Image 1 (cartoon, one colour):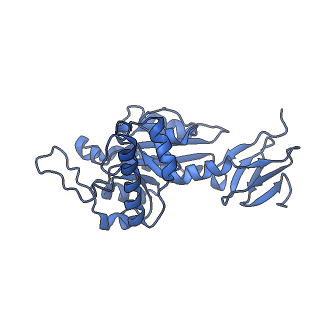
Image 2 (image 1 turned 30 degrees about the horizontal axis):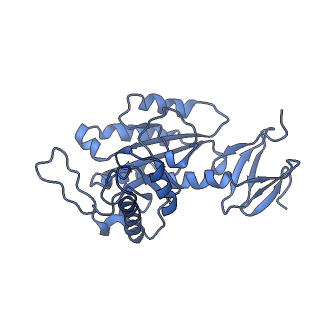
Image 3 (image 1 turned 90 degrees about the horizontal axis):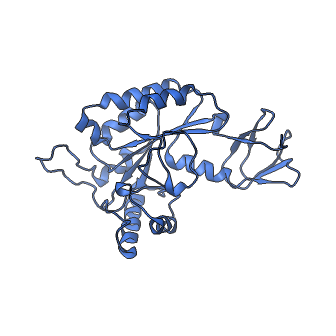
Length: 283
């Protein structure tokens, strides 16, 4: 057995994290936010800065009207706002100048409305390529969500291909939820659900999302409820940890406290900006 076999823990020593991601900034987000706040779960809402306030035609089969710009800061105050391209264009098929405009102008508008820096992006239609990933990095995004279900709880290997566990309409949703809650694991695990709030009106299944978040919340003793950006921030900070040659010291250069479990089952908090001698106090 190696001298150093550390396992990443989430804040407060938890080894599970739950997050949600919902797109388009539709009116139904109001009901969804109220639901999420009631059960104390966290979501990243991905918006199109150029479509805010759009009114859905009366004859449309489902209302996809967008929340107006002046409501954005208050509506999403307990959650995270992410980018979703200015007009929800397929940025993977556009020339680089216009694709970059869709990315940057969306980010500029939403940062002005929220008063914060956007960290997350969701690919419109789930479409992207290597050029789009590079543009998102240039624009200052930390990560981007796809629409590819993994049916697993693995941490992301590439933050710009952040694959969710499943969509909320996935037939395995509740099977996965039970497995996530009951599974005993040493490794950190992430349950990540996504969708569009208007789908609950279209399918008349608001009870489905409430059942999910109620179950996760009621069994949340070992679960960190966080936004997409909070989780990526934490994982990114953990990747910056520096080890001494003999493995007895760990330096945390980030501004985030990181928690680990050592090979001997000891929980250690690696304070931001300090060097920790394992088993001792920070130097």
